[in-house]
Length: 332
Length: 206
Image (tube, each protein chain N blue to C red):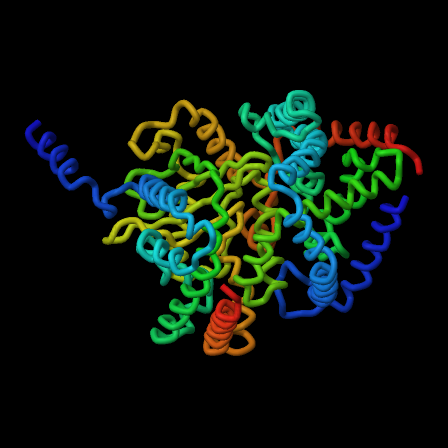
């Protein structure tokens, strides 16, 4: 209920602020005025409370214990990651995520040890916002959430309306215990990003814009599982333009016969997958998404999600999954 | 046949200088060398900035094309800068990138770098070398290197970590700076940033 309320507030805020959006900034960031203010608020809170706590936590906890805590929460997250992989049609990855959970919960002592990674079951990064992106839902405007930080209209609503259903901590009946667990998770999360946030602060001319643009690039990459097609680049200089073109040719245009390793051998073993991917990508490129794909590409500045061929089936499955979730989630 | 043997021999005899290495082989060679040095040098792992700088200067920087990097970061405004401004921009951007990212070397902890098969046609002068850094507990992080062929061997002009280009991530900011203060405004901001990092570093008790 709280989340629904949050979501409504968010929606109202977004719609209301749309009117007084600043102009002349980044095309992906019509809400820049509000976003900068919220970024400033979050940053202040981080400096005053969260970062000092996280630094203290990192200083006090021995490293192996910290890794154990990180693993414990990561293990709980694998179930929801698996569900999202399946919603996106990546059944193999989803099954692997459930396998991770089973293995780490048992052999890994309630998830304290990540034995699954050592056994070759890779950790994935999925959430419902990515699932929507995969289904073709655009991200909407960049949006900085209170406390939670960088997001977008799509990802923010997904987080507040859907993702928390997949968070096992919400199902902990004892409220103080639940809040404590969530606090530790937040702290552990922040502690693991201390180096990264320092780096971003040092590297950035404009901290807000640096974080925003990194977030947008990162989300786009995650939706494509790290295999995003090169973005249409309106800023081509002659030099960069030429190189981008040749990269596009490498990524999408080369027939499988040209896929070779550095030794000139055709890719066969691990490349079974490589080949399939390249084909899939060129097929996706060939499929007309809109009536006029080229101008549509140029205007879709943020994401150009690939619509899977089993789109209808996926929608049906997701509807069912949501119904199941609605039935099983406790009514507050 | 004779020619073949001669070719083999000459390749062997020169022990493959960096100019002749394939792009992915070059990245692998540099990574292996740098990791080996970090593993053996306690000072570097403890954050000795002088030693880190020496390592980066000697092993890493010769394989980067900072002119191309800066052009890519500035984007459509690059031709608006004259040759002198382009030179200054490149220098300042290089200083900023090297300073901020070389310190990341100290965070190395037994991660394993895997190389994905190179997707390139024979004769391509521009390729992406794709790697994955594995570490237990978190999902692997991809690091991709945009590389171009130059007379001095393959050079890196873009580094993409987890889908985020460390180069083009600056473009919106640079655009805004140039819109507000022209190319000189951007130069001033970059120089100011570098100076403030200087004073920060020197004020830190080391």
